[in-house]
Length: 514
Image (cartoon, rainbow, N blue to C red; front, top):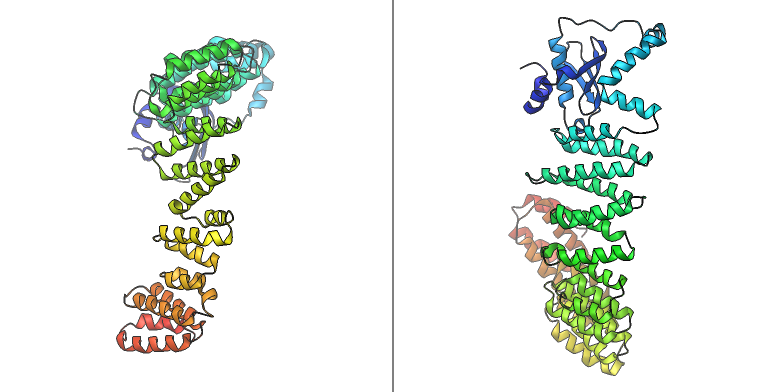
């Protein structure tokens, strides 16, 4: 293996070896070489060498170089090896001096010969001096890209550079023709093992089509999109082009064609994409002024789809048809698989009862939300709906129903000032710290008992220094409570006997400020 071949994948080396005839040296010295390697495009290639002649750095303007060393670099290195015997340094005469020394007739003759054989140069010349682009040039260029190993990168470059230039020239018909070929090739490539780059190519093509939709060939673009979505594209990718189709083209005949299209798609597509097509059809029915009864009849068939159901609910609320919205929400609660969805439906239902001045059902629904989801804000909201003498009974019923929601009950007891209940219900270290200041004055003894219980549970287990630091912090919290110094001293004396062989623990306990 040559000293530089390890820098490349084997497949790249093989491709580079067979394109050494496409290398043109521009400038060469012992430490650096600049060249053009021709292919689908002309790429500028540069390699620098260290003092020993080993490759020091490389660069190429092709898209593939962004992720790895490319075949164009390999081709140049093979070319240099093959022509090692004929190595000559670049002539000192500058290109400018050489150019000035040649008469116009010879320059024209040379340029004309090059233009006949070099498509890239011919196109550059035409772009600079002609008023019309060479359609065959772009079609041939794209044909070459289709068979390139680096198809995805080359196509991206073609879209960024050549298609962008054609937009500047307003060559919209040619762009659509080229994009159609690129689209078909990208879809074909996607039939092989998954490659995100080909999917990205379809997105880039979609962006081009979206721009074309607002040009003077919008009718042709519309027909192209309808054809692609209906016949030419796998449903995993059709959605890209359907979004463009749906967001544009709002003439009456186009709306009707789109309506026919979604009708054809909905029965065939899988459930993952079907919901978006159903929503599109509903919007089209509105745009085409279908009777509301017919729209509702269609939606009722697809209420299992959350977005379809929510759209139906939102529309009913907008029309102030609260009874319909309430009925739909109850259906949603019954059909929802996820608790988070059910929670949102319950909130909507509660707000609708309030909007429709149905205060009895509003309070009932809010009560159900509290016992299901244990949220202190809902609790505070419900309390506002009752007189003081009524609330005590409702409150006790909530406490009984939420017996397993320990943190929620603590929040309620704190909010209500029921500190006897709160001190009885505290079991966790975090809750002790949270409510310590409120309880330490009137409940210091009981509070210290709970701290002691937790501290003894923690110290019974060996652990890391962090574990012992946490216990020390707990003891310091106890010291801030009336009577805490005595309790902590007694615990430490007991532990000195029981846990005397824990030097790390006692080292950390130096933090206890007794």
